[in-house]
Length: 366
Image (tube, rainbow, N blue to C red):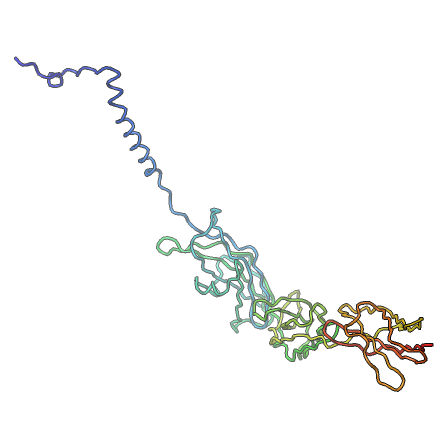
C-alpha cells in the first residue's frame, strides 16, 4: 500500500529546521509588515467636520455722520475652536430704536436684522481686516431717539446651514440734529501756514473737524485738528506739495457726539513767493586797497545766500556778486582813490525770492 502524505493522514507535517524556516519566512514577514503599516496610514478614527462658528466681534464703534450711522469693527478671522476660518463670512447688522424717554430693554436676544451683507457686498466695505459701513436712517426714527446697534457674522455649513457668531458689543447712541455739509471751504497760502476758512452753518455747532490728505483718495483723509471757529492755519506743510482738505461740523448734546457730512474737497499746492527779510547791520570800512563789507547773518531757514550791490555817484547800482555769497562778508577791491561808494545787500532764498535791499552803507576811498 502506498502511504498517504502526512496532511491527508491527519498528521502534522514535519517541522523544518530553524535555519530553513527563518530564511523562507523572512520575506513574507517583511511584506506583511509593509502592508500593515500602509493600512495604518489609511485607516483611523474619522474626525467630524469642523463647525466654523466665527468668534464674537468685540470692537464695534458707531458714529453719527449726517443722517447715517458709520460702523467700524474688525472682521473675525478665527472660529470659536481657535482655528482659522476657511469659509467666507456674511454680516448682519441689528438695531433697536427707542424714544428718548423710554427705558432700554434688558436683553437684545431677539433683535431684528437691520441690514445683511453677503460675501460680495461685504468685500466692498473691507479695508484689510477692518469693516466700515455707513447705514442711512430709515426715516422712521423719532426725534432725539436712542438707537442700540450691534453686529454678528455668519458662515454657512452643511446644506447651507448658518453658523452665527455671538452678538457683538452693543453701542447705544442718541440721534442728534446736525447741519448740512459745510460750504465755502477755501485755502490761501501764507508764508508760515496754509490758511483755511469756511462758511459757518445756520445751526449752532460745538466745533469743526478738519481732514487732510496727500493723495486725494477718499479713504486717505485723516483728521488733523478740531477748532471752535470756522478757520484753521495748517503750519505742517511743505511748499510745492499738493494737499487736499475737507471739513465737518461737530454737534455735542446729551452726552453724544455727531458730525455733519464732510464738505466738498479742495486742493492746494502752496508756492513760495515770499522773499526773505532784508539783511541788517551793513557796515562798510575802507582799508589800504579795498572796501570791507560785513552785516548780520540772516535767520531765514531757506536762505541761499546774499547779493551785494554798489552805486557810484552819477551811475546806477550794479551787482558785484556773480553768485550769491554763503557768508555775510564781502571785500570790494575794485575801488579808486577819491571816490565815494554806496553799498546795499539783499538776501536770496532757495525758491529764488530776493529780499528788499538793506540800509545803505557808504565808504570813501582816500
